[in-house]
Length: 83
Image 1 (spheres, one colour):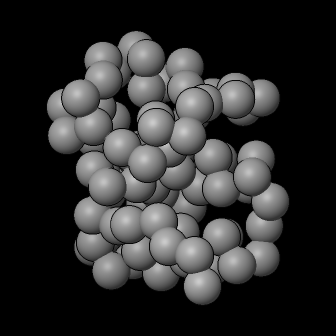
Image 2: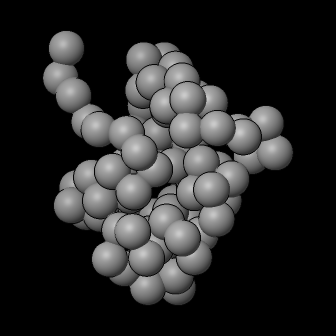
């Protein structure tokens, strides 16, 4: 899936779709895919976390803090919103 996320708009649409139809673990998995598409090193740098920490936070079964989810979402060029 990551190879199909070529632009910031692709990432935004993908994350929005998962947020609308999935659950929390689906969204964390989607963040992982989007971060890989953009480049884990770049996302980690923008989010202010280490690359290793980012991998661990977005791994299957992980339970990242809300602050981490928020930072990663922002690093991907998106924002969290309540509608």
